[in-house]
Length: 344
Image (tube, rainbow, N blue to C red; front, side, top):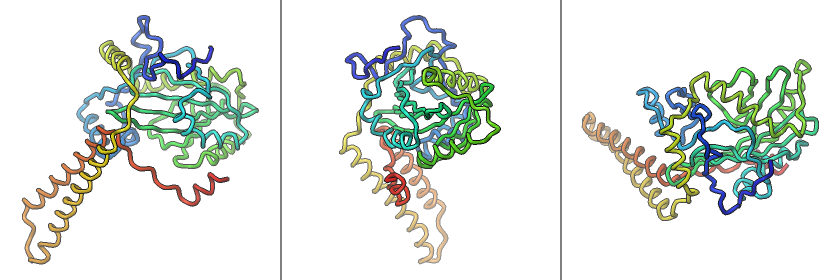
């Protein structure tokens, strides 16, 4: 399949894959939030308020509507690495540097095919010379409101005899994995450590490793996708999309535009609002504690209830404004150990 430039004028980053023909609804799957565990809901939440909403919807059996679905595809949407968006390459560069330092070579790049504007995902594959390791470097951009959430992750696979796989990832996934996959989690660990740990795992003489040839790379993501889709369909986490929902996503994909960063003044106002509201709440708590001690009186129930209600309103309103603007927590500063490891 020929590489298609990503900067073509008609290349809508939220356009659906080839759905011009009548697509079987069973070929397009969507997450059913009611089947998510509380651990999965916590992992997929941006903050505590978001988790409480997901948990409440689960308990009340309310199904949330996502802005993307996953179609079954027979071939990858291959891309030219040098023509990927600069934001993708910049984000994945530390992971690529780690792969190169560990002796892996670049294999191919592709864009995950989805229906709807809620997910824009690019993946780079790096392969060891002997084919015993293939690293997936994934850049995911989830769209919500007028903002977006960007994530990058590394997953290292080794193919074993009998259709089984050895997998090492840098995430603390909470969901159950297919029985064909032997998973090791290393959340927050540097990519070089992740690759070294996976290399240590495959040194076991009891493993029957089936090397992956370079010409097989375009089939590997498809094989792994079939395993995942089959497993999550059996568990009920992925379900066939309805015709109404598919039409909704297609309309969203046609009208969607890339999310823009919130205006600096809007961000400044939300932060000022947060400082004032949280300050007022803390002042109420301090008054509630100190006043009775000074007057040697008990705290009236109405005062305590008022402070509690004001605190809940403060947290919910701040979370709402941050969600609408797509504001994300500021990244934590690198520690000296991380900086030293990156220099190495």
